[in-house]
Image (cartoon, rainbow, N blue to C red; front, side):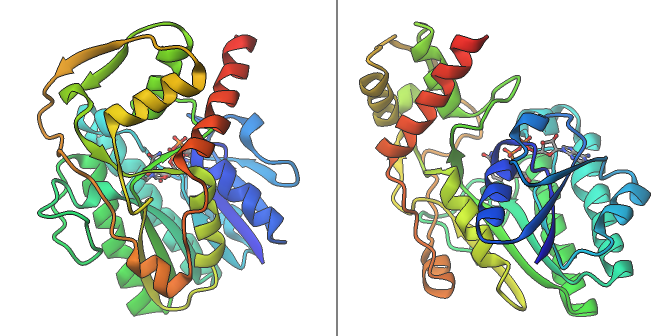
Length: 307
Ligand SMILES: NC(=O)c1ccc[n+]([C@@H]2O[C@H](COP(=O)([O-])OP(=O)(O)OC[C@H]3O[C@@H](n4cnc5c(N)ncnc54)[C@H](O)[C@@H]3O)[C@@H](O)[C@H]2O)c1
């Protein structure tokens, strides 16, 4: 298929674009490079520099596509709390520009990156797709609202939509400034000999899984007709403290822990029920935490040595 992949100069999108190329698709990347970098765009993909908030730019990019894989977003929770308007402008208004471009150009197939943040504080774990959705920050709110728009474009215009709610991905291409995610901060702290900052003394459980496992799911999601929503996570979960200990073991550098105490709104357990993705898509995470961390640490070491 001829694909447009938005946000593929970023952490997850770059790996998704690479897997789509490997699967034989033609890939053009639409990204404003506000966060991502051209170096992340895989070889063989064309880079179209543009902003989702520019309706003409995204319409132009969609012409001639068979499907769109949509990852571009304002994706940082703290930034969305500071500046909700920006999250709304990019995730909802920009997202709508994309849907309208697709509708007008008769492109009716979309794979979308949603998030576990649509659930807010879970009422139970593991979380199933039909469990209550009560986002606790504007990022989660915009993602949930966009899912509702996708549902309406499916019903009104026959769009085929697959949306993936990722839990806690990590991987070599993650390089945000500031970095708000746990694993890159743990690895950077360990490699640079600084204490690892931990809330709740690391007693929480999170559903960490490797970015290439997400990427494979997107290749599968393109083939689905209708309207589909899937959780993506390891399905087993890891205590944060155990992940830090494993990172210390793999880097050979135990830089100690800085306990940051309690954090409001931080659920003790986040865990995906991935039964639906397993049964309907045949998707299973394939990369173990240890193997994924090894690949991630190697990439971070290279980056630190270069800087
Ligand atoms: N990383 C996670 O933990 C996580 C978890 C759940 C869901 N997601 C979702 O996955 C997707 C990718 O996340 P990521 O972590 O790779 O983020 P990222 O910030 O690394 O990548 C997003 C990309 O979108 C681009 N972008 C941002 N605003 C844009 C705009 N207005 N127009 C065009 N391009 C724009 C950025 O330059 C960047 O390259 C996002 O939709 C995010 O909400 C991520």
